Structures are given as C-alpha cells and as structure tokens.
Image 1 (spheres, helix red, strand yellow):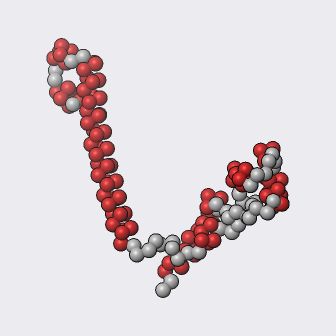
Image 2: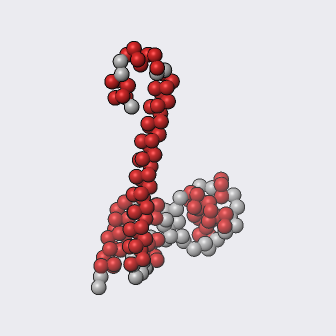
Image 3: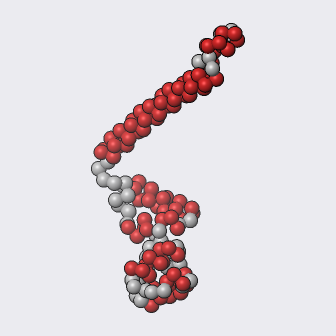
Length: 144
C-alpha cells in the first residue's frame, strides 16, 4: 500500500487521495494482516489440541493415578491456610465472629470445635516444596 503511494507523483497524490482515504486504506490493510495472524494462531491451537487429545487417548491411565492423595495435597496444617480459607472453614462449621478474629484465634476456635485439619493448598506450597513433590511424583511414575 505504502509502496504504491510512494511511486505516485506528489501532484497526483494531492489531487486524488485524501488523508482520510490513506488512513482508511492503512486500517484495512492492518485488519487483513491481523486476520491472517488470528487464522494462523487458530490453526496452531487446533493442531495442539489434536495432539493433546491423541496423547491423552493413548494413555492407559492418568499419570498421577498411582500417587497417594495425601502426597498431592501436602501435609495438613491450619497455619499454612490463607485467611480466606480459614474464614470459609469457620463459616461452614458455624463459628461466628470470624471476620473480627485474627488467624491465630480462628485456628484456636477451629481446633476447639474439632474441625479436622485441612491439607495445605498447592498454591500455598513454596517452590522448594513443589519441586520436591514433582521429583517424588516422577520417581514413583518411573518405578517399574
């Protein structure tokens, strides 16, 4: 588009083409370019989904099926819970006034009420704990 305009003489350009026309044509070219990119990304995603579906169909059992559930969830702990998860536990177990409590008081009240200790959520694990968890999982998967 720009090359075609550069090849024209300045006089011809002034007479036939307005700035609005140039802007409109540039936007059309940009839209065509974006459409090509989106089609390319769509094809790539479709191929990736197809590969993943084939790989999933070829698996006899899920990779993590042999791992004990407690290993995936981490060791139970009240202290490693977020404030939001402790509030949720208080709410579901009928403990009132939790919004004004500190974490320590919520933990005390939950223990006092006999609520079982929840497992540590995966997003609360440190990088070192996650790496150790993955290494153990890989070792169990690779064992004959």
